[in-house]
Image 1: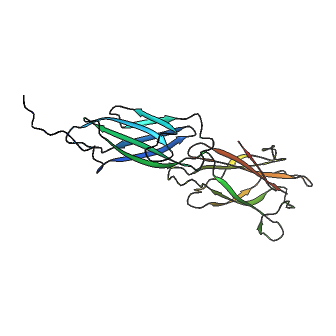
Image 2: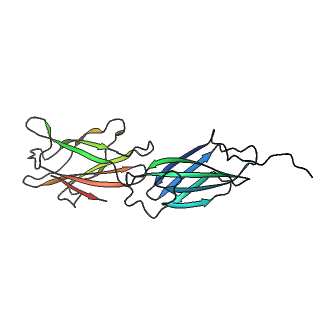
Image 3: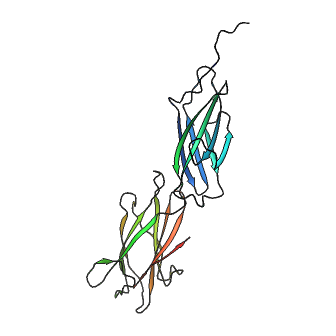
Length: 235
């Protein structure tokens, strides 16, 4: 038998190839791909890995996924990787064992949306101020403004929830007001005006306004300001 077909000397084409990667939660990355083509000897298998550079596997070694076009990587945690850019790399191999590689960059998130500012209304002139200890003469209510920003650049990582509570100390959260959600799209507008009513505050008592935030990958943070300061704690 005589075979007139010349051997395939080129790797799979990347013309229509694509790779996407996104973080599902605090320990999972999801990678998908497609469009790798090889007309001469066909794509025979894919390998996927995670690294600090395109094609690198210093974070997760390359794994043979046969002809699957999806791979979920599970980590114990992302400690120390917050804000770090990693690369999900996919290698396509044809029948002649020639490879092509394409990578997608992703910014890892291991921190909650940031509380950039809390301004409490000053009773005598209505101004919103950042004062270490503000005297407040209304025992039934108060108003404050809060600024919350999600610094992660990935489009799917956004502020999902912002809540406030009023307590008697840095680690005492709900003595005067239980956790209550601030209903607002903080992606569109990072500032929110919060009005709290039906309180039973006591004169000559220090209260803390606590803010906790969470994003779409599940990380959260609790932050408190001394009112009527500065205090923060992971949750």
